[in-house]
Amino acid sequence: QVQLVESGGGLVQAGGSLRLSCAGSGRAFTGYPMGWFRQAPGKEREFVARISWSGSSTYYTDSVKGRFTISRDNAKNTVYLQMNSLKPEDTAVYYCARSTLLVPTTLGKDYAYWGQGTQVTVSS
Image (cartoon, rainbow, N blue to C red; front, side, top):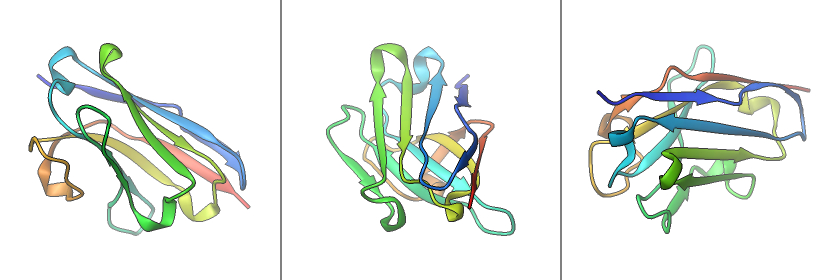
């Protein structure tokens, strides 16, 4: 059973920072890319960032490039999303997910295991 648990969300003013963490069970991470997605009220879930198993390859949606950084510590079975220069439009529930593919992907359908989500609210 793959279990993912996000933490680190909260309320922050525009321009502030948050660091999200996603802790997984032992087999959750081994060999697989990981991703972060978000869903704002009334909107569809969207891809935010993904990282390869080794951590050497990362990719971001355009709206967060230069502000967000995804990283992972495989020894701790944890993936991180450092979010800087936050904007009100970043407000959403953020989910981490494990890909079912061994190659990095940005498509939600390629991720079979999801955390419960953590709320990020950015006030203006």
